[in-house]
Structures are given as C-alpha cells and as structure tokens.
Length: 606
Image (tube, rainbow, N blue to C red):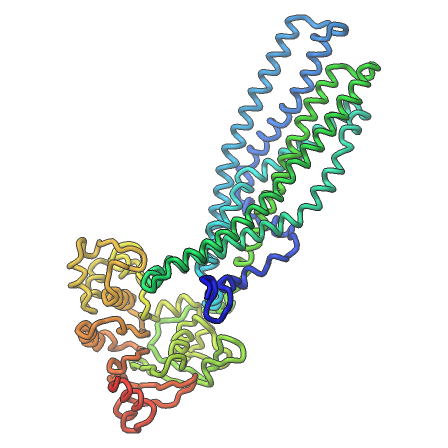
C-alpha cells in the first residue's frame, strides 16, 4: 500500500477537500471590493492630507517635463533659443524645487498610507476573529482548526499591500495617466493619438488573462489552507505519529502537499508576470512610433525638439503607472481571492442565534426540563428521539449508556451549543431560546474529559471562568477540589507558567484545574462530562468527597463510563440510540436487572 493511500484506497488528499474550498468558481465580485474599502471609512479624515500630498506630488511630476521643454526650446536650442543664463539658473532652481516638493509629498504619502493600512488590517482581523468566536459548533464541526487559522492570518495578511499602498497608488496612477493624456493632446493631438494607438491592444490582451489569473490565485489560497490544516493536525497529533513511527509517511504526505502548493504558486506567478512583457512590448511599439513620427514632425517644423523631448518624458511617465496598474490588478486578484474566503466566514451566520427579543436569564434555581427533544447532527439521522427529562433544583442526574447513545448531545443542548430540531429545553420554566446566550452559559459550569489548559499561569487558568476572582477565592476553589497541594508543589505555585494545553502537567492535574475553574464560576448548574476519567483512584476519592459538599444546592448532570462514580446520583438516566430506556436511582435500577444492571455487571467483569 502506498504511503499516500489509506486502507480504503482513497487518496489522503481527499481529506483536505473541505466545504470552504468549493468557492473557487465564483465570478469576480466587485461588491466585495466595496466591502473591503468600507473598512477604510473610519480613516477618511486621516486620508484627506494623504490624498492632498498625492495630488501635489503628481502635479509636480507632471510639471517637470513641461519645464524641461521650455528650457530646451527657449534657452538651449541654438536656433530658436534666446534666454539668458539667469533664466537658465532660475529654471534649474525651479526644477530642483519641484523635485524637492515631490520628494516631501511622496515621503509623507508613503509613511501615512502605511500607518492607515495597518490600522485597516488590524480592524479587519479584529472583526473576523470576533465573528468566528460567535459562530456555532456546527461551523467548527465541518472545518479543521488549520483551515480557520489561515483565514485570520494568511488571508488577512494578503490584503496588506492593497491597504498600505495599493489604494492610494491606484488613485495616484489614474490621476497621473489622465493628466498625461490631457497634456499630450494639448501639446500635439496627432502625435498624442499616434503613440496611444497601442493602448487598446494592450488592454485586449491583458483582459484575456484576468480570469485565469484570478482562478490561479484562488487555487493558491486553497492549497495554502490545506497545508495549514495539515500542519495543525500534524503538530497536535505528533505524539501519535511518533508512537506509531509514522514520521516518514507524514513527511512524504507533507512533501506531496507542499509540492502541489509550489506548482500552484508557480503557475499563478507565471501568469502574473505576463503583464510585464505585454506592457513592455506595448511601450516599445509606442516609443518607436514616437521617434519615427515625432522626428518627421520636427523636420517639418510642426513641433519643436523640446516638445519631442517632453513627449518622450511623458511617455516614460505614462507607461510606468500602466505597469503599476498591471501589478495592481494582479495584487487586486490576490486580494479578491483572499477576501472571498474572509467574507465567506464573515457572512456565515450562527446556527444558534439569539432572538431579537432575547432577555437576560435571571438568577436561576436550577430546575431543568427537556420536553420531547428531537435532535440530529445530520438531516435524517436523529441523535435524540423524543427525549423528555426533568431535573429539580439541586438534583444530581447521571447520564449513562454506550458511546453514541446521546449523553453528550443532551449536555450540548442544555448549554445551547446546538438547538433541538423539535421540543424545548427549559430552565425554571423559561425556554432557553428566549434568553441571551451569555446569561445562560454564565450560570452553567462544565468540566470536560478533554481539559483545555491555556498558556499562562495556573492562577489565570483557574479564574478563566470568573476573571474578577480574588487570589483568596482562587485558592479556596483549588482547596475544595484538592488541587492546592499539588499547585503549591510547583516551582512558582499559582504563578507557575504552563504552556498551551498544559503539557507540563499530568492529565489528573489538568482535570483538577478544570474542576477548580468550573467551581470558581459558582454555577447553578454543573456539568461533569467524564470529568473523573483521567484521574487516579486516590485522587478520585478525594474529589468525590469534595463534590458531596460542592454539588449541594446545585443541579448537576454527570456523564460517566466509570459507573462507580455515579451510584450516589439522585437519578440515573440510561440512554440507548437516542432514547431513554431506563430511569431511576442506583438501587432501583439494579433491582430491575435491566440495561443498567448489565452495564454494571459488564464493567465489573472487565
């Protein structure tokens, strides 16, 4: 079996054909360009002096060739020239002044456009990150973390050139082109029209390249997204890779993806470079026409030598912005490819959204009622089938059953990570869809099996659920779950720095920190999702003793495969394929000798 093929014979590359990569055939959307420029609106006042300096710099640049024409015709020309040395000095001084003004204006423009551009990029990245934090779990179910990461980093970074200099340069080049065309036609209409006859030909050729170049840069962004997704997966799964000695296969797969990305980039870059030769050839033809037809007009005294020199200078100034506009168009295509991907995320609406009339959930007692709940992750495949379940305030409810029976789904609905297809979830009689999400989740604490520890101090990780907690409250929460002793045994106690995911801590220690984090938030409803699965027996006994006090007065939902941990629950709910098959306390269920009894027996035999 080849390194790049899995057991089902499918290419591993198929894993990276995500839903978000299917937008490549979308037509060029100018409305997206307007959406991008909308991020510049807050900086309109700051742009005004930049535009003023840009206009000043452009006008001085257009004035210099005209001044050179006057110097040649009035002073240097041995036949018609009649100017004095003083006039020559004054003309020279005027040209130096114009160059100085042009330098100062350009320096101001470049500096401040860069500042404004970085502020726009900052705002765009802030907006994107703020938005993706509000998206529902369904959004992340379909996309790997690396694919999301590339939108916030690479795709936003790809817009930097557009905002830092592209927009102002585009305006400057357009003004310069219009000014040059007007000046050339004013100086001599026939010669002006003759040298610009090649411009339509250039636009016809370049237009045919636009669609191909846009698709090429979209393809580059897609390939880079796949690489980032694979990198994120590989780094997070590095222990598994090394444990199964799959470094070589992983490297071969990455080499393949990297090679595909290189080919994609080379193709887009090669198409990009076609603009330059097209413009150079057009400029060369225009220059030939200028000197052939221009020299004829000079010989016939229709124009002067100074005017021909001015035309040559204006021609150089004419093709320079044309070349920049070609590069700008390529830059715009790159920006469009990235903006399509950015706005695809921004336009994504949360599947779990607040109603317009949603109100803050008042302080709750903790009565929870699941009323005929039907839920499906995929249409036509229900995960819950008409679940009805009630928990009174202060009760402890244990959810047990085989993997896939619907335990975690019930918890996800209670936290409103998803909304049911049918039925209602009520807390104290209030439908949770009628209240604000933040007010709901602020009164529900959850401890998951896969504990996430953030990079930072132990103290910061514990108070993540309540940022205004005092040190004394943090210590009290840690003591309550028996985490204080191991924390004080660390080099800096509560100030000990831990890396992302808390890799320097044992799984049991990370789980204890998550307990302290949840309890510090003082929730009225506490969820324990396999919370003791990674804790050794001795630590578990300590936590069980602490929980007897900590759970008092709180409604709790516990998911556990280790059934010994939930035998004291007020109510045990046994689930199977999305349905409740048994319900009661430990003694009642054992006496029935049904599904729960079978689970207990099987676990003890194991």
